[in-house]
Length: 241
Image 1 (cartoon, rainbow, N blue to C red):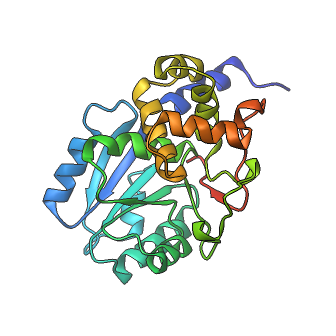
Image 2 (cartoon, rainbow, N blue to C red; image 1 turned 180 degrees about the horizontal axis):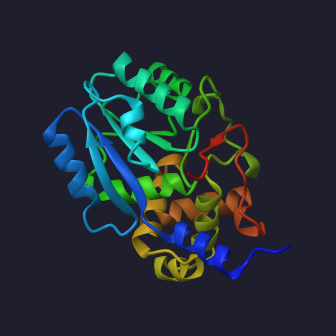
């Protein structure tokens, strides 16, 4: 028997409700900076703060978070253990890590422990809410550990090897076809700020300086002639929280 109107409405309310967020940090200054970054965002509800030196995973999960944001200053084993315990007790909660350095060895350990994503602490606090939201929506990807380096790619890049997410490819297709940021935002039902956020990621990943160069890349690889967004070959896409 099909779902009732009540159950459909209930699922819709849960999907649209703000994500419950717990911040794990041992510095009050870091906590305040993160709190400021999420201030005014209707996407997240800050339900608690925890000190990683004194709090265990079970205590954090008692707040029923959708997202746990862990600040890791010294790339410690303590953070890795906390990630493992969170993942062991709840395989659905999104575990995001703020880290100073993003060296490959550390990233391998963090993802091996079960982290959903790692975010550079160089990120401006004002951009943090957008970055976390897009990560949870599956629009941010990370290279698979020990995967091929960018230096191994040849100048002629096949469309299926474009290092972009589906959403980034979709936006690049529209931009390369002449759409403005406002046009793209209306088409995809997102804000212009979100479009700009994705464009910055596109420029960085493609090593281009502006939308003109990115559009040129899209034409060279045939992206603007594909009816559907291009998938990602050999890359692990983050799951929706």
